[in-house]
Image (cartoon, rainbow, N blue to C red; front, side):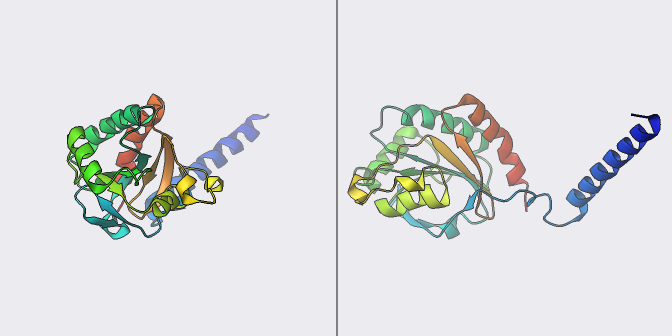
Length: 203
């Protein structure tokens, strides 16, 4: 390529880059909305470890990580919760950040059981909330709202259905699911910790 051609190539590259950063800085919402969300959080109503109702209105305007587990799990749940603790410890003092851990076995994980589990975890349950409720509602949240389990796996009978996923959903202040992470992968956990501030800074 000639020197003149290289000059024009460089010129247009600088022009496009400048235009992009101009949009980021001066067009409202461009920075936050340059990528479509994965999904969004539908209305929900569950009980926390204290027997209090928690709905989507209680987490509106918050950045949070949604996960699913069950208290008697001895396989993926303990290491997954240990990794969630790293996220908790990093951001437990951020007023606009929460962790929401939903049970996938509400027939076992009653409010009392979740309370005992939360006390064993020794965390601030205003920042790390443990939720139980109707099984069909919980599973619908995992599959439709958070998209951390395959919606095609729905069983004919809810009694026979079972979710066992190590994936987490990161939800922004507007209730959009913006990222999915593997809670058993060190690299994913580290990336989540790096990503959270970006969404906390959003207005």
